[in-house]
Every structure is written in structure tokens, then in C-alpha cells.
Image 1 (cartoon, rainbow, N blue to C red):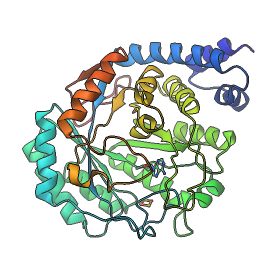
Image 2 (cartoon, protein in one colour):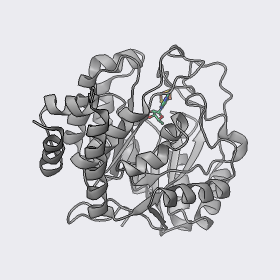
Image 3 (spheres, rainbow, N blue to C red):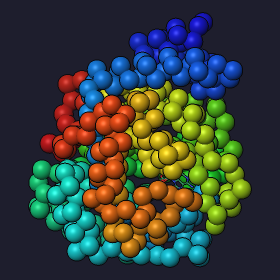
Image 4 (tube, rainbow, N blue to C red):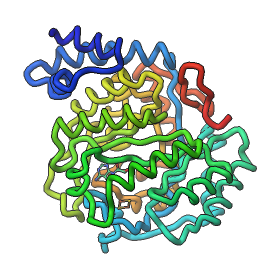
Length: 357
Ligand code: 5AD
Ligand code: FES
């Protein structure tokens, strides 16, 4: 089958046999042909569903304490060199205020798995944000919690939850995480989050150590099962104080092909052009948008702590004020041919409801 017919089938059926997915993902010796077909179709599909709209999410990295020890991550518990910080409720609310004035209508509270933030504290923060900004969505990204904790945050007003599965292959998962973490548990969390009623976001790293094309295909199959509202992928980037410091970063073009494949398989999905993508290439986020992404997540965290949320080496946007990031991202989105909207920006499933309503 020709490359063009494979891409057309993918668009039409939102699916392809493994062997064809492998051909597109690897695009060995025919990168230009595959990418031309993928990016063109992905952009058309994204325009069908979302026009040229790009949603902005204000990211608030509120703690870099973490009880987990994911081998790839710069803020893992075992990294004694990490300088730890926590934001107070007041500091978090100040980030939201600044973000609101800059046109953000979704706040993403992201942190390590930090026991200092009890369920009560998280619920209090969420309900305060919702009371102050009833026209905004609150997204949480706090890692693995019990069903009851997820439910409590939801009842307090949280609308969305992000938890990347990282890899859908159990053996690969074990090579990236210590023995006390499991893919089963991770998946259970995602199904719990979905059942409770959150809009759910998941995703995986591209080019993580030991990843194969077959693993990536398993990731796509897992996404088909979960049917998440948001899918975040970004390149693995090595961090000097992890055991993976000598591994190569994920490849830009592999990320771009996967973004386009995701857009064709999940036309309704909210797909960010991630900071990690912008870190491995100066124009990575613009290229991501052109390949099918429709969300950007500029940083609203206080400047003085930005560098400390050090997931991987070279992370961009650690020195710029929120207002500057906002202007910068607006220019980048416009240069790529799209437009930022000041909107809560819910997922557009056929007949579905927008998030936070
Ligand atoms: N490279 C790229 N992404 C990383 N993340 C954590 N460490 C790294 C790294 N070294 C990603 C994980 C996590 C998200 C918050 O950041 O996918 O879910
Ligand atoms: Fe914090 Fe993995 S090191 S969640």
C-alpha cells in the first residue's frame, strides 16, 4: 500500500493495522513523503474540529517535592541535588490572578507526589480558585492518588486531571520506574479519574530509554481503550542527575509524526505542543502545532522557583515573566498560522459537552 493510502485510511478509520502504523512511525527512507501526507491531513482534521484555535493553559508548578523515584525525572525523590520548594495557597492564588489578567481560563496545578499537600489542602486550593474564577477550569496533575482522593478533588470543583501513563508496556514501564510503581496501578488511576467524571489527560514520552516502535504502538492501543480527552506527548530529555544521563534525547521528527498520527486517530483530542518539544528545537512548538497540536501551556509559576522545577536539562521558559511568556507564545502561535483564544477551551467531541460546564 502507498504511504498516501495508509494516511488516508488512518484518517478515515481512525485506525490502522500495527504493520502500517510501524511504517508511518519509522518512515525509514521515506521521511519526507510520510511527513508531507501526515501533516497535511492532520492539519485539515484539526481545522475541521477546532479551526485555527489554540487553547492556552496556565501551568502552575506548585511543588517539586516528590515521593516517587521515576528514573528519568530530575525531581525524583532520589535526586539529592534538587533544591526543593513548595508554594503556599496565597502564592498559588497570586499565580492565578496574574494568569487571569493575561487571559488564561484554565489553571493547571502540577506537582510532584508531595504528602505535605493533604487532600484537605488540595480541596481548599481548588475551591478557592473556583470561587474566585467561576469561569475557569481547574486541571490537576498531582500523580497517583486513591479513588477517594480523586473524588474529593472533583467534588471540590476540579474539572480535569492529567496523568501520563508514560509507557503502556509493563516491561518497559519497569525499566523506567522503581519496583514500587506499576503500570497496572497507573492504568487503574486513569480509569478511576475517568469514571469520576473528570476530563482525562494522559500521554507518554517519546524516545525514552529502551523504547521501541512496538512500545509506541502499544501506547496508541492503550489510548484507544482509554479514549482520553487530552493527550500529551513530548520527547524524553536526559537529566544530568539521573541514571539516564547518557541516553539520547527523543527525536523531534518522531514526535512530530506521532502528533499527526494522534490527531488522525483522536480528531477531537486536545493535544499540547509541549515545553519539552520547544526545548529540543527552538521552533519545536510551532512545528508541533502544524503537525496537529492545538494547546500550549505557558508557565505561570513564580520566576524565583522556575529553574527548580527541573524535570530535564535545558528546560525553556525558566527565566521569563508570565506576561513575557504570554506575548512570546502569542507570536509563535500566530507565526505558525493559528490563533490563541481566551476561552475555557473544552474538548469538542461530537455531541459532547465542553469541559468545566
Ligand atoms: N524528559 C522528558 N519528559 C519528562 N518528564 C519527566 N521527566 C522527563 C524527562 N527527563 C515528563 C513526564 C511527566 C511530565 C510532567 O514530565 O512525562 O509526566
Ligand atoms: Fe515524581 Fe516520578 S519522580 S512522579
